[in-house]
Length: 292
Image 1 (cartoon, one colour):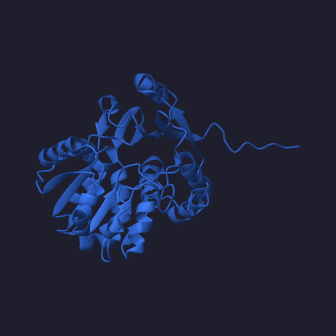
Image 2 (tube, one colour):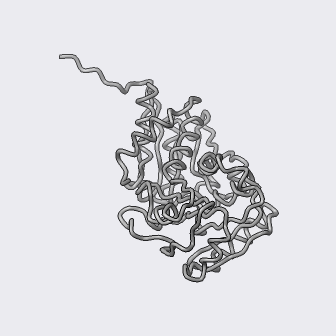
Image 3 (tube, one colour):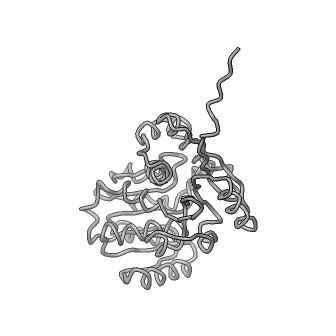
């Protein structure tokens, strides 16, 4: 009986670091992509508490890993440990992808690519438009950067449960990107109906509505949405969140977080392998695993 191991001394190792890490679908996505493309790579999850970050990076470099994704709570903490970072990282202040370039660790933020590719079909509609972004965390930074840098929006409402955090985000980007068309709001859905209705684009960057809390939503007021709007939710499990279902019922165009998840992953994949990810096949494969 012959046994042939698909992994060998030429197998390239990539992965994701964070704490906790068990919720991540990145290993599934990338390993499906490597299998489809016939690449000799494997993607592994590594549970790395913040206190172990520096030692972990040293170990990964010594082992010759090609790179890794970075998730909470390490996206900002990893910055001082990198030799070089990209333009978007300099402004956003967070890394989600690291490339090991012969021992030199370089940081990127491919979440930006996920936003840009997800909203690309609506680029002309968004120039000069008023948009509302729900949340004020790391994902929010990537969304705001992309909206200003690539879509040339005219005004951004930042809506967050803690209004002061939204104000801080507003001040941060006013300095970093010299963009001053911001307004901060507390997340009080009944008071925001007109703000939402006045927005060409609404983006949820919070975990609200993520499985298993799929009945949660930043707003349950269907009057918040209308035909002609674009509503984008970065949550990808379930694929169609409650927020998106409500928006769709009112005639809005919806953009799922699954598209963003695959697009940001595709950029990381390209940085590590130099190849294009078979995105549409990967998207179909993921849909069979996620709550619809």
